[in-house]
Length: 486
Image 1 (spheres, rainbow, N blue to C red):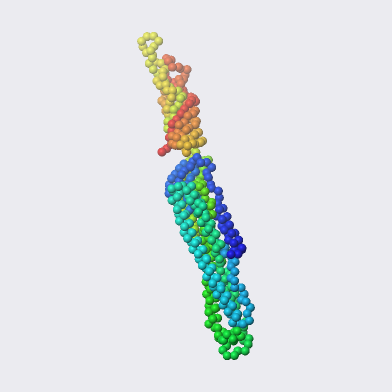
Image 2 (cartoon, rainbow, N blue to C red):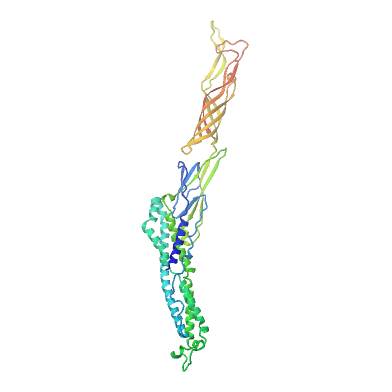
């Protein structure tokens, strides 16, 4: 092969290599604290965000991405890697003095070119057959990686496909492109001979000497012009034209733009495609991640459904453009609103007393007297409460969270304690699984006391039938245990 042929193949294969290796860097989640391990068969799983979805795929066989459309071609089309550098050896027929000698020179050229075509086809067929056998073995190797991944993980797959023997086989298959020879030179030689044969009548129109006896004898044949010579050599002339036409037809399939060259170019392109794909694979390539962050600022719930797009590269072996397969509903990540509403019980440390008129021992004598007394004195007072929480931070995959909370409840009391009133609690809460909330902070509620200047133990005037009670809001410590609605 010529220098230009080798340079052309090198440039094409270099371009294919650059194209196949221009993959973006592997995406990794900013934080690895919320990893959710998935499989291709996952469906319907729901988690609370933020989350880092992670899946292990066979990076040798599949192209994969989360929520993206990925397409692959069957490899670069290399029909132009076969520029002609073949020297047919025929050239222009040597200048001869007679029509018969000229014809014999053409016929010799035809036989020589036919022999060269047979030798070239033998080499190209063997090269093509060897490439077919290698592609079959390569396809089996790629299929084997599925089981290798299950049994040995990414490390075993990388060791398998990047082994020295596998790489050598690939390199040998690619180098076989340089063994392939096109028939452009042979076709050019045949076309020149065909044109020369067709031009014989015009080039040798008349006899060049006197003819005596048999015109077709060896003595006379060299002096004949076309009119007489064609009568003697008509069968040979037509046979030569037929041979040229048949050899041209056969050689046409092996030219640089012929069917045989195009098919072989695709095969070498497939090998180069897989070499580049395997070269780009590392152990990290098998782990695909997609990050779903929760940045909700308002009172809304956000839901993200992840899907996986897979492209099976083995369809490249069949010369087909790969089609993506979508695995919908692989994972649903829910980012809940930072606000939550709960209900439960609160406990206030504001003292709550219930006053009454009680019978008491007199200072002297035996008859009891009525005095102001206390029938109930609670240091801790429970009451029902509803609370609103604003989440500030969470830990351990949302098992625990810190909230700023505010709640309002109803402190139900009788008239002897000043009657029922609203009570308020605000502070910080710790939640468990975003279901159970424990809150502690400032409690503001009403506290009752005797009014009118009376004190506990004072004698009740005869015109008073119930203790005079007044209330006022006081601040104290409170805590609550509340729950979200199931």
